[in-house]
Length: 374
Ligand code: NAD
Image 1 (cartoon, rainbow, N blue to C red):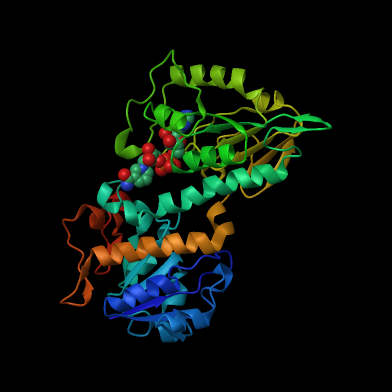
Image 2: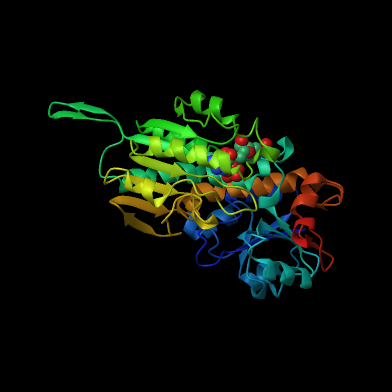
């Protein structure tokens, strides 16, 4: 069995394998072929892959006879002409937005696996690319906010007077939000946070931050379905808007991360609320690509409204390409190792496995994912 590791498109600096995972894959008995230059933007030199046991080649060479193809983003179908029918393509394939590409993979006879659709069950935790990348995005959002903020984060008592601590508010306490809280605390900010899921209250407190919750209308008890939030009732939204209005005017930094799977991101901050913040404040919206939690935010851009800097964060994990590649690559290795059939020296992907059915998009020239069919 041969595994191909692709060099990504120009806008994607991450890579789907690192020398450590190449060594581990080789130990499973496979040959790993890495496209020349694949790791360059994640600070990995070709010779490091070679030293780990991989061969190097161009796209045609690495794809030839490969049974498994590893990528971060789904590669353009036109660049996979040399892939064998039946090969398994594994990556963050973005199935809903890139439906045409999925159909093209299907036509080419590839078995496409979208790792971002892995279920949130304990067994899949080590393969969870959403969590590994969100964690880094939460960290980077705070670092970017600190860079854009014209004041300091920690309280400083100096001979020339006192600098007061920045007040940082995190909206949406999933994986990214928790890391944003932890990073804000490490930098010395006074941190508060909110979510619709009641289970997050204790998590916020355990990180030394203050929970700010809607009490008059019930939120989502426990973790919510599959760990995710749903859309809230109009009553809840009104109570939340009032709560935010009271709180936000006193904040210097706001990090929003609220997402609802399969739906546009909930609107949490209006333009009028932005206007109540003092000049020089910063908002980083991690939901910018999904429609944005904040009115006026533009995905991939930084704009200033009412003296407040609005950062429409997009794919922040990319800006930490060495670390995000390492975590992504380990997620993929963990998946392969979990389903590796030693005797057959191949991936064994049972039709009745919960993880397999969730991530498998195409097989035998057909689109098989129920999510894509519905
Ligand atoms: P997410 O990216 O889908 O959303 C981010 C946060 O926004 C969530 O906490 C959500 O509750 C919150 N949110 C949604 N609507 C909101 C609103 N109107 N106002 C305020 N907040 C709102 O979430 P995520 O980071 O993917 O994590 C969701 C949960 O899943 C977490 O509890 C996480 O620990 C859990 N999880 C479990 C596993 C596993 O068991 N394998 C893996 C990853 C995450």
